[in-house]
Image 1 (cartoon, rainbow, N blue to C red):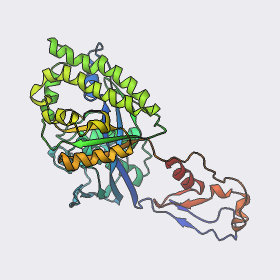
Image 2: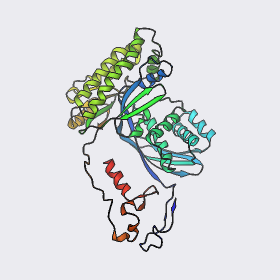
Image 3: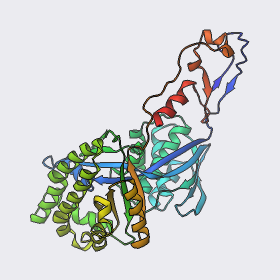
Image 4: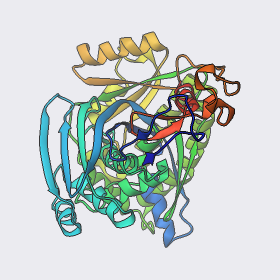
Length: 426
């Protein structure tokens, strides 16, 4: 993009020609996601495409405090990737030709780079783009811990294409490209995983057959403090999914009827109330709902897959005496089993103590998470009118707030835009 000449004819105000490279470097950040309530209802709701009597699925998800940070820029004909794992190990650079058949081959072949190749293939299918270089230089999001690190990476690649090539994808479009890209790989994911595109905003998601709807939940005025705990054990997610899917689309026995009830009417009631208590900032009630949700899950789901969902380490952690005084409640995470647990802490101080207990006493790997902000800007003033002597006589034609400036992405924006963006983010 090139802006030539002055803004008002032969203006002596010193405004020079600005040349902005559309392929300039862009900085990116994508968080992980955690499903607070409603796990498994995404795929269960998908059965409504052929069986309308099944209730729609719904869940509440939110972004994590841990992220993937990257820098991206254009490349004429290759996809070049470098990543940093959560332990600091740098992997790459890896590259492949930016051709349909090559991207599809890598995606279907599996492996770490298949996710990016799958997303690149989908973006190339729908948008006129060239290659891309992505350097994932900082990673605080743990991998393979139920926080959708693979989905976050897919969203990162989709967002990189959007920002570098100015595709202006909204979050839903980023989610769609990330989802379509990930299902090209041998790894399968649900529709909820890509909601990390929304950031750290709690989001209510609905699954009605192929229809996906999202609704942002108003964040509470006072933050709710949570802790996600990696149980350092093992589970077989594919076995869990296989067992629970036997209940769909038509239940053939009492156990399968219980699974449909759990993921249908029971889940609907819990998620509806949870959305309200989150917006109200009622941490105590949210913890109680999580405990109740775990009780219902144990009642209806364990009989369907006892080998994985009996989960002795999960239940021992949820009821551990050192944890109980610090929390309002808790439950399993994701597909459940001995993977991760989540707790609602009674306060910020209790959250810190819970992190210590899990790390030092139980030898587990905890992560902190908060819903809502500790400090918010309630009022800000951004001057948008008036004249500037330094910009005279240009300011007679264009108000100072609308003067074009080139941001770090190499794109011109009105001068007031960065101020508005920063205040909105705060």
